[in-house]
Length: 93
Image 1: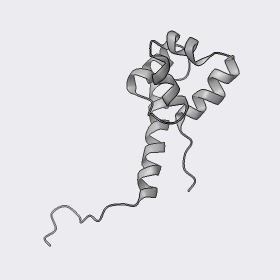
Image 2: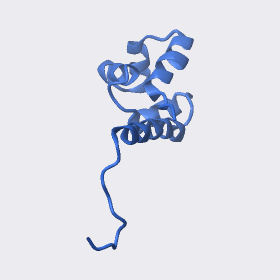
Image 3: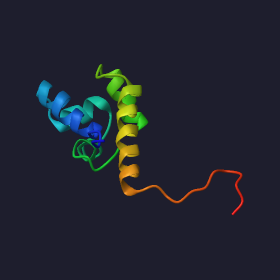
């Protein structure tokens, strides 16, 4: 399965670029620092619940959708890294 796109890429390409809004202007509108938003849209940081709520309040999707995209991306990354060796709970070695 292909790795789901980082939600920061969606925010960068489908929201900010489409609206013609700078990172600084978007960060100010969303109540986050420019550095925080830049890290997210450059895929170096996760979308936080706080940012997801800000996006929802700004009319850009729902917080639940942004967090679901982030979770899907994170889970795919963990699966690609390899699952740890585990046993079913309650089994004896």
